[in-house]
Image (tube, rainbow, N blue to C red; front, side, top):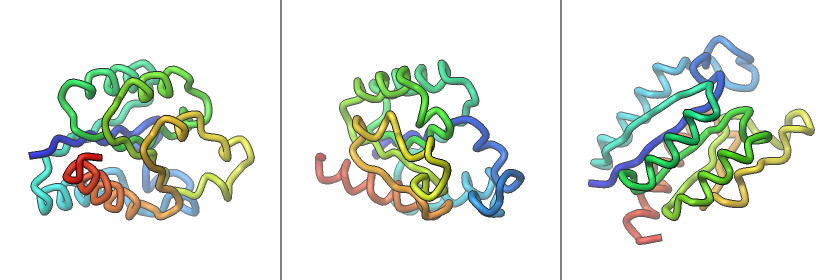
Length: 147
């Protein structure tokens, strides 16, 4: 059984409350439910973590090197600012997908640049919470194919 970790960064715990035009009306509990449902269908062991703290996210990435076969990360605002998260991800030598609910390229200019894109396997953005299902499917295939 594959072990996959989803890491959600700052403010994602407030889904459904914040900027519904960007992030939709579904709340964080809904997001967790659809992810666990899909992982069960694929027989994946899924762990979901959320933190508003940069250092905690770095710790999660570092620990995942030993016990996770793949990581999906929505680093939120840290996508555009955190060299520390980028450095931790660069040490993770397994499949890793950067994920954004909104299309960061249609938003404010400072959001167009991702510090982590250069060290992940792939990127998904702008597909709402459905992007999480696509990310789970994709990382599952990468693990199965030995990518």
